[in-house]
Every structure is written in structure tokens, then in C-alpha cells.
Length: 247
Image (cartoon, rainbow, N blue to C red; front, top):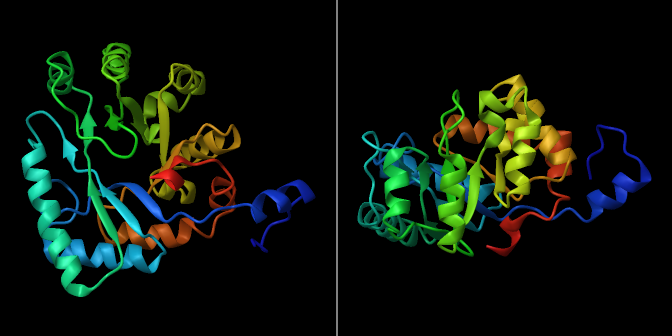
């Protein structure tokens, strides 16, 4: 399957069992509501490229972030309907869903404390992110509240958080608390940084990846995805029991 690197017999058997990804659970393809697609034209361009890459189900996860991206379920679903209509007009074979990528800030904590319904994907999964630089002081409370309300917390791209780069044990602690981990496929190509790539590869090696997402915002991400798919660790990623396959 992957001929450009040497594989052991055990690796050969694993790669034969690799399952291609046809469902993405992290993207920013809805137009004009965050830092992803700016308009319908860009949305359709991204969706078309992802279809060409073999995806058959996409879950859009627009940012919800305090004062910055004040998205609501109504705003997100309205955009989803418009994109779905445009996709239908093109006759494309793709299933579109929408959830959100929640930023762990005081706004998010208040939503949890008030038990506001969260935008979820799949089996009641809630995707959330944190500051890239500073470890969140309310992380444990947020995890407790999500789980106590029946949600399954999914930490977006842990490999990108600088506060984890020299402290892999902290990721393991979160993993052992029952938080599911999602890596960005582009991390495997070094797109974000070398340290992010190292952590992503270590997560794959330790079989600590539950979801793989494109986190697609623009066509430059598509270009990087093609590169990432040629990497050894992408092939290894596909041998894991990823939950993408049951979405």
C-alpha cells in the first residue's frame, strides 16, 4: 500500500486492514460565520475538493467563541440548509451535518452551567478547543459538566497546544479522564509546526487518537491534506480504530 518506506510483516498486515476515511467531523466549510469559507463559492470549492478526496460525509464545526464568533444553533443551521441546497443543485453525493467547535472560555462554561443544549455530532460528541498557549484553568470542571450532562467531550487538535509540547503526560491524563482526542490530518505533514507534528505522531504511536479531522478552512488546507496523505503516519493513522468510521 505504501511503497516508499520499509515495513515489517506486522506493519504490512496492519496496513492491509487500513480503512479509508469517508467521514470528516471537523471543518469550517459553512460560509461567512467564522475564519473558514468566506462565501458560498468558497464553501462549494472546499466541498468539491473533499468529495474528490473520497469523503462522503462532512460535519461542519463553526467556531463558537465568546465575543469573537457569536454563532448560535439557529445561525449555523440556517447556513447548513443554504449549503445543502447549493450542493443538491450540483447533484453531489455528499451528506452534510453541522455541530460546533466550542472555545473553552467563560461563555462556554456558562452554557454548561445553565445546561444549554450543545451542538453535537455523532453519538452526542461535543468538540471543544482551548487556548493554544495557556492551559485552561477550568478544564476539569468543563469535562465534568459535559460528561455529567451526557455529552462525550472531544478535544480538538491537542497536538497544536503549545502547553502540551513538552508535557505529553498531561495529554495522557486527559485521555485517561475519558476525553476523546481528535488530531488534524495536516499535523502529520508538519503544516502547523514541527512540535505539533511530533505530538500528533506520538498520539498515533500510542493509539490515543479517536478522531481524525481535516479542520479545513481554505484551499491551502486542501493542498496540505494531499501532502499529509502521502506520509507514513497517515497510513499508520488509518490502521487505528477511528470513530470517524461509525459517524
